[in-house]
Image (tube, rainbow, N blue to C red; front, side, top):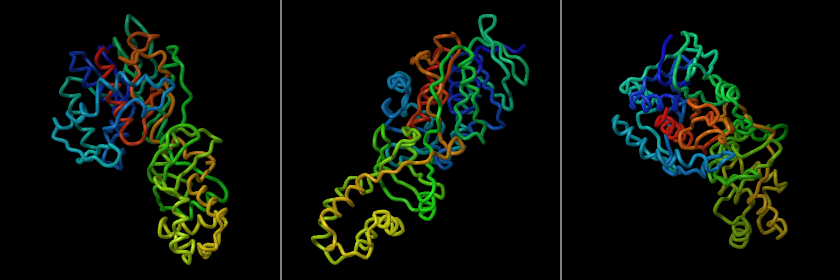
Length: 395
């Protein structure tokens, strides 16, 4: 029977990173995964560029039943720490919007860096290795795998959540957590496009490809000033992906279509300065033409009407809709396109400093499988690095 000090199950961002840092402490480490390739979620991230962290990382940008849980790990392993690692491997990056850092050499370079780090530290990687059971035995753990049983002192679960099943997502982490007495916060797709039915579905399909800046709000949670994108199935774009993490079935989502501006003042000024201008001319100069044409119909207004003909009551009503266009999505595109999983292994039975189970010493949960879910834009990768580093200090 093979024995290692630490067995890490999951060769994604958190698992690979945890493997190298644990091995550098002199521990014998094996990382196993059922997939054929490591780091598949890294590979597809950021359009293939890997948005590997966010400079604005702080605990308030993460969802969790315990909003304080992530603070310790995030404070001890920062975005700049990971940037230092990238620089040590001659990788460079650039900042896009809102603190997002993307790798100049594309995502494959980040995966190779993690593999090189693991090998240099003396850790081993075994792919296409399934796990059929984990039991606490002989002061450690006995893990049954398709390559034979492995005995270890510590087990670190880094198998992620349920998002994007085509690259191997499964309930494995939750099943193991429940086996050892942990509770699971209800899971749901997060950072995911929203779908609509009936007239809105048809209308949005016709508007597919149109994008415009908005401030989006779910019924709970913060507002996000990002782009909205119409699709054949409904709505997407960064603004929608962000609010989807806070949205619950049946809730409405509101969009301010003129973020940072006062629609009422805009309309009154336009009426005063160009009263002969038509609604179509005014809206098409401010919004994408296809959206402007459709939205005026949504407001039940004649797009050929001149601004001078609008009553104060009509202007007030239009301004209110522009300021808070409220929609009730039918649902989301689900796990197939969700970037991450909201919910997961409840944090009340995990150490915020080490990610170790309070119910079973030697058992750790890191990364996406934990009830810590970041905003769009590199936050979830930073949680993977930080939670992995926390576990690696003691496993």
